Image (tube, rainbow, N blue to C red; front, side):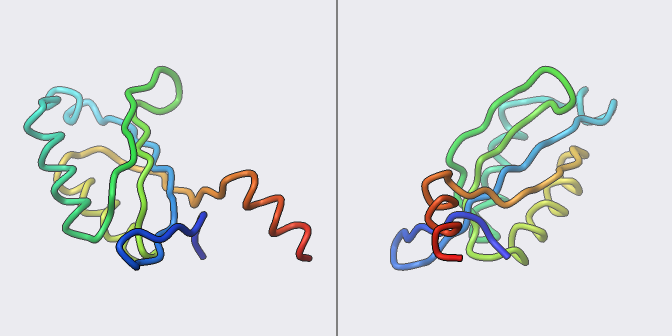
Length: 106
């Protein structure tokens, strides 16, 4: 299982969307320092952050990340929760042009 595969530094990476939801406690702890710690933690698990967004609506955060496999992104998601108290729903993402290509190969 994985998302769109791209290669950086010779490593095949999959794209994932991580939707974050603040708890009442994690909302009180918002700081640039915590964000830096979260970015460092993602790197620790072999991930790369493409971009991060604050949202309105059902989710509070969106992280667009690359990981080598599902195991690493799952570990990072749990570790982020332990660090920040922010729960994440994570989904693999496939670029539409790649999806179209996959469907024509069926």
